[in-house]
Image 1 (tube, one colour):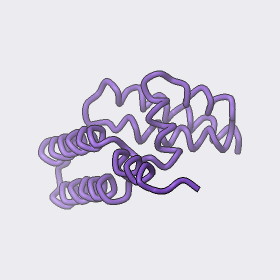
Image 2 (cartoon, helix red, strand yellow):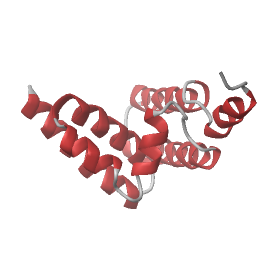
Image 3 (cartoon, one colour):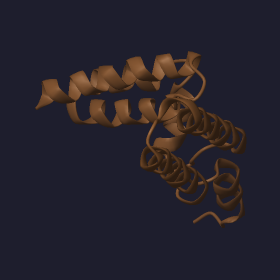
Image 4 (cartoon, helix red, strand yellow):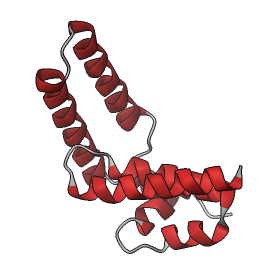
Amino acid sequence: MRYLWLTLGFLCVGLGFVGIVVPGLPATGFFVAAAWCFSKSSEKFLTWLLNLPMVGPLLQDYRAGLGMPLRAKWFASVSLSLAVSISSLFAIRPLWGKCGCVALGLIGLWYIWTRVPLRERVLAEQDASPER
């Protein structure tokens, strides 16, 4: 099982790097998935991933329960909306496929805005809570 998690982790890292360059591909989601896979298979590669300059700080914040910055939520939402729009208009033929694509996009937007904490709000709550 360790090799399966390692393979999935590296696949997610590769897709994450592609997602940095290709608009509409959710890089952060792939890096979060890679961190989860590496946490099940290799502490060495998890440490490597958490120390990458561009994604390491975001992953560390996410793992610490801080969530996403507002700017990242907006960027993810716009990228997801563009990808769903282009896919449903040009790539997917049958009507049920277009509806399914839009439904998955709406689920993704719902998840980003309701289930992923807003980093600024979490930090403000931590600052407001009394030290024990």
